[in-house]
Length: 501
Image (cartoon, rainbow, N blue to C red):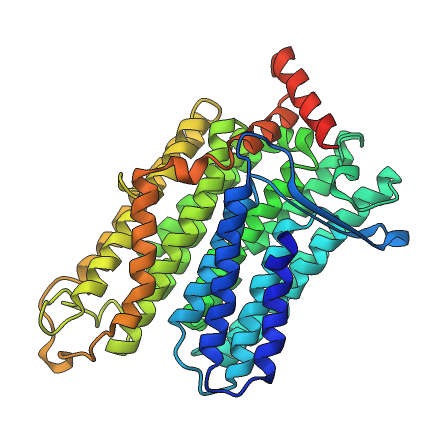
């Protein structure tokens, strides 16, 4: 069942390369739609009461190198798999009919979808690394060929940073297996808790920096604003909604998961790092004049909440961090889509030029209303999905890191500030008669934002649908990293780990 999520998009990319140009978008939508439905089917087969890997697949491959085809899904990867397939469909649907190299465009998006699914499912370190690197070249091409101003510069910057990310991660994986003398790169055989603590800290540092580039966290973030701004709206949706979450997944799976004791020792540093990212991203976003760049910097701040939840090492904060991955992906997707629609219809993203888009006759009223909803969700307004994830993170983190948590709460206030600035300047005020009567927004252009808005609202009022999949997995991960647990809890966690192995 899991292999379908990887190889069906790969085979679809090959099929699209052989088809005539006319039905390519419909074929790509059908392929991504099937993968989305298959993901929903997997959710129905998933048992949320157990932290064990489920639906596992194993196929011997290069056993002399310790590389085998080994897949599995748990509460950490399942929500991100569903987010990946949903945003892939959204990105394909929201893309304009590509007149320039359409076969390559849709093939690359499907390759990215399959590669991300493979990385989320891989239970072998080298297999994860292979899938992790596969998406590098497709994203580089998607940015450089179909991007906007300075797209070649942004694509090259993205390539260099993410190549460095992969090198650091591979170095950490090789060091972990070689130092332990393990003969396999299988995840369960690569636990680093038997190594001396200082070695664990070094290897964990490589993992944190490697995946910190991908997220990104301050000061590893400098590639992100240029890349998000240069990328087209569908590609920006995938960059912010999917790729950044793969970095957060990697930190939890291979940082917290492989080095739980080292993670616990570094937890205060990680919480401070998260706080710096939150405050920096929010503060810099306030100063931006370009809507897309403002949203890009807001992403840096919101990814800091994920690290804060993981650093607190409570089951509640970790569930909140996983929920924040999904919530942020949905919110960022709706914002980038709407910014793309505004730029297409109005011809600019500059706050100093935009005004009065809420005008019911000559403006873009529905787009403006959905933009307000996205801004409210990003600011953590109750009733929307952003509130659920942020509240869980803060509730679970406050008892452990009260100062850092309170500073991150200040970050949510700053989020409200820059979104009020954005909405006040773009949606309200008097519409300039010189640029009035914008092209009509077709219903097909509204569909992605409407779908995302419904999901954002539904998960906000029914948060159990967001968090219940991850509760058991989060409890097990926290138990492995917290030596101060009671003896019954430790015995239960050890028994679960034994059964899983």
